[in-house]
Length: 158
Image (cartoon, rainbow, N blue to C red; front, side, top):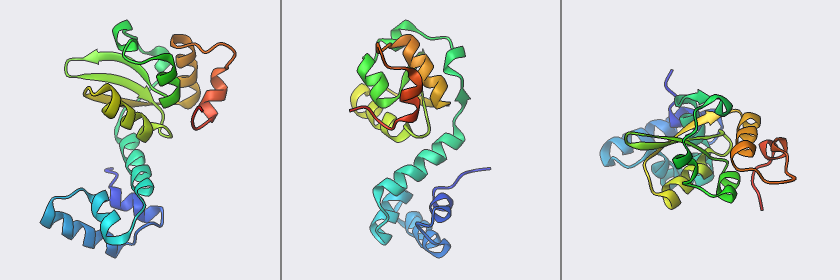
């Protein structure tokens, strides 16, 4: 089943079906992204579009257990301990054309912004259980005195 951004925004009560149809018509004319048109035509908050996009991406990407993944030391070196915990990302490995990282659905949008704007490398983000990601981050980027379960439940550091 394909998760459509418009359907997710309807499900959240942000848009109506007729509004989605109008956005799709405009998108066919202009080629602009659905979210940008929704923001412009109906004042949809960028945060609402971002959250729907994160749900869409999370539903389409692979789910992994970061504790069972093979980790490449060169990939781990792409981020600092602070960045890994702050953005809830665990670099796993390099594939031929991209860096593969793990994150959680809750942190997906923030993680993607960081990867795109700071790392500047093509990347794919895999979804992980928050607690398992916390354990994996604790294993590879330990922060003394901070248990991984605390990080699994919080939205951000600092």
